[in-house]
Image (cartoon, rainbow, N blue to C red; front, side, top):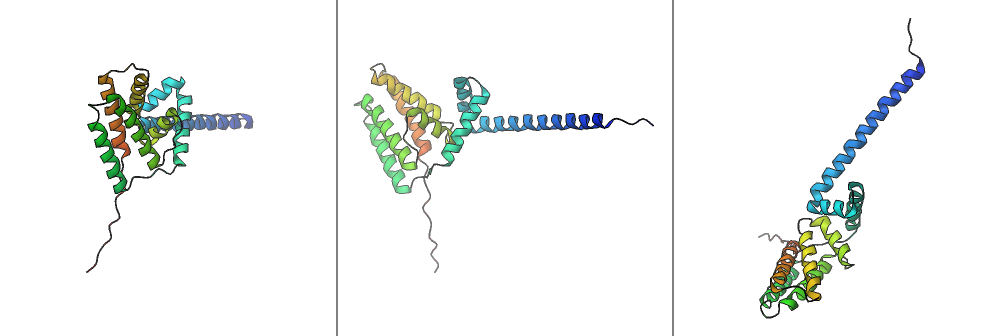
Length: 189
């Protein structure tokens, strides 16, 4: 009778277990990558390019998620939303008279809105990273608006660029202007 030595059976089990574990790890990482790509969209690719690889980028994006999880981001009450909308409309009306001033005011109004919603007001890159977690589709607008505002600060932006900055800020502003529904009180007759 031919018997297989015990060490060969153990070695075979260990090899199979390692293959299963490797496959599980591979699929888990792939699912994580897919989830992050879907959640962050173009911001995923930008972060990969900026940090030079998927592993570093995914570590950064997961850290952003974890950081924002601990923030108290809240939608606006309808009265606050109306006040911010009115301020934005007034700001746009002033663009013809003072495009440069309006870009500065748009940036300040967006920051005020972010603060009211609960976003911390750290440096620009941190604000953009925090926004990218819940608003990945518009964070690039914020980056573009900030770049134009910086060029304007140096006296290098023309009126068309300033108009584009206001448009970029508006896209972010509209996205950030989430409104909390007023609670309806049922009246029973």
